[in-house]
Length: 226
Figure 1: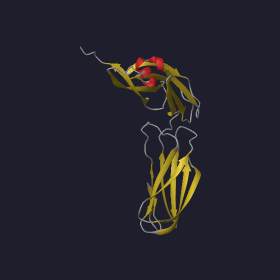
Figure 2: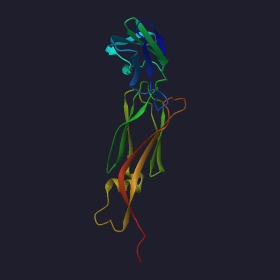
Figure 3: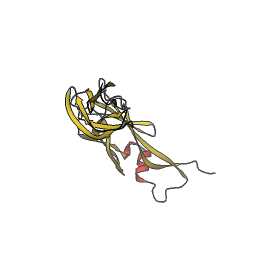
Figure 4: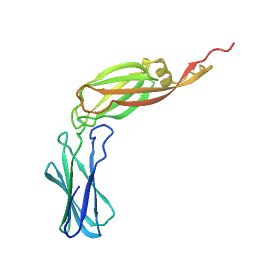
């Protein structure tokens, strides 16, 4: 934080919360805290990205209590240098930072649905760049049932994946429900399907993504009484 003192000491500090993804995810929200040693009327905040002015805001006033201002950044490259400047009656304060790299692509769960035929999952590439090739793993109650590879997705597009009910007797039982008159002495077992997406080598998307879906219960026959 750099503050230039004049008639009124003013301060500005950029604050950017890192993403658990290990890179910046969209939308890119950049915030700054602004305050003044004493109450004054009128202030201007100017935002610059890579040395060029991109936005400005006028504030009704400042005081010693911290206020927050924000800007939505539309990234055009993997990393950007952001600067914010605060002007109040001849006083000026600036702060700058280089943002962490923007995720080249970000796989997100767009929607999912299931019926007696199986589970369908729609994944989306939140961009801003096309995805690489992604390895997918389906597990049912922790047991691996299927592996496949997702072709590269352009930014802003989606892909549908399908796990048929026939992949597992547990899955089929959970999706179809118990047959009438077949309950017997079965015990109910919860059925959880996990989908793991692992980016290929060289991709900066971040950690492996895992989504879990609870699809109901399957009846498992217990031991017969004597």
